[in-house]
Length: 110
Image (tube, rainbow, N blue to C red; front, side, top):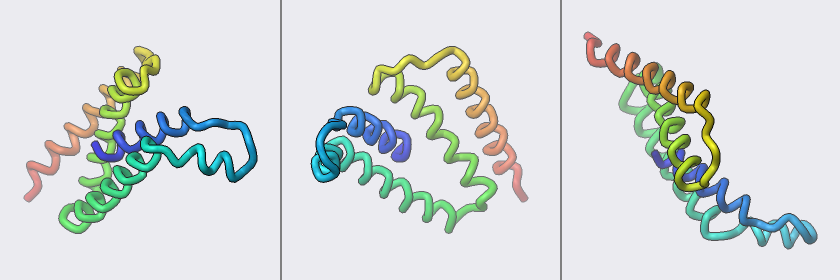
């Protein structure tokens, strides 16, 4: 969830930044609260991801990161107010089904 939230905040922060002026003005414009918080959330995600890789099999951890797509679709619709098409919702449900299948396979592990 940290990765989807971080990416959504980065997206909002980048869209709020101005695109005019020189290089220095553009750099200053992207340093806003959304970009800073998004970056911190992404750092949190990376730390948690490293811990998960330490404690569990890669083949289990990697599919679980796909849950960020589900959170991402909801954040795109309700936080960023973007249009999320029916095809994207179906794709999100397919990803969710895959995560469930991987999770069920892990519970039956000997």
